Image (cartoon, rainbow, N blue to C red; front, side, top):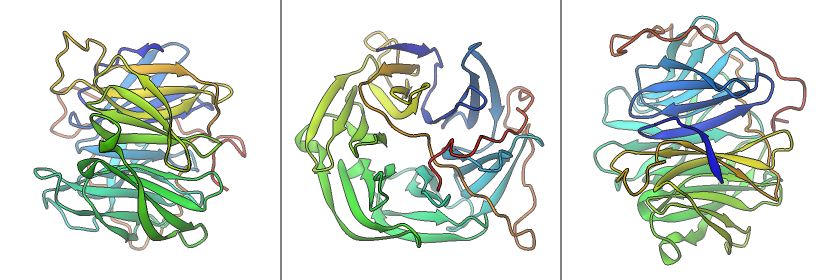
Length: 327
């Protein structure tokens, strides 16, 4: 375990490793910013999105990032250096915001909404279809969505509810994107301090879950048994993502919000961990826009809330075939 990058994030989240560009993307939720770290040079570019981003995914066409934001779903375009809304499934300025999310094997983007001032209020998980306009409500009664994952064979869907300190599992129909038969996977309050936050999954189907306020990363078997427990030098780890040439390393975001920095001075930084296991790259959003109904761009690269100009946007790239999980 070592410090990979001194990010100093208030609430770092949604890390994405792109081996094609050798870039690592992440957000700082409360600062409403997105960051692009060029790993070989350790040079970072910072972008003001102008809205809290809970989750994001690279687009399969290489043109940008789909984002789960305060009012629903949006898109960051690399070439235009511009953010625009795509879908507002629960309205605008409602007191909700999107939290964690991810793409399934068919390239649809999922995220769950969280009530900003009461994280015990039940919310829903939405699925943004590949047209970029249709947001389907799929799962009810999740208060604080974290760690949306699919098993390697895409037969199971996992999701944690941080407010309830529980992780659930569903049977999953891959083609239609339909979950069913919800059941408890683990009541984490019986095992750990803190709450289950962001997560990833390895090729053996074991979950790797960060415990926010618990300073731990935990590997959990498909049967719901604790396999490994790793102490971390940050109190609030937020999300792991597979990294490296063999995808046997993890990069872990963290938060320094309300943390005693004398006790946990590395909080807010990005951690690196070498493992004996292998994972996969994050799925990409298979964006197939319908230009007749999608709304126009709603904000530019430098919204009024930005304290400083944004960095120039990276140029779009296309990964070689097979470089992401999407089938």
